Length: 69
Image (cartoon, rainbow, N blue to C red; front, side, top):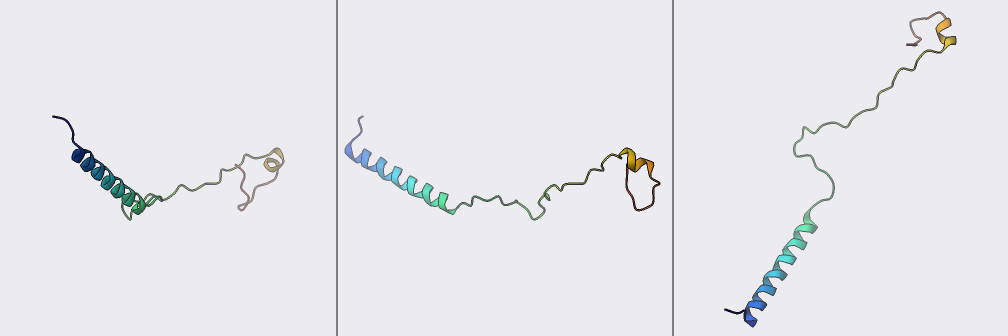
């Protein structure tokens, strides 16, 4: 059995229809990330790392409001 002209036309129509459907679906999708639920994981936060004491700070008497670790 060999392919006829009608088979090629039918295949071309199917390919064109599939291309149009994929193009329409591509236009409908969003590029930004959307979480799947309302309980998304919060973004990480930066924390302050305590700095080490210098010799001058360690020699001073400590009070309640000074921080040196």
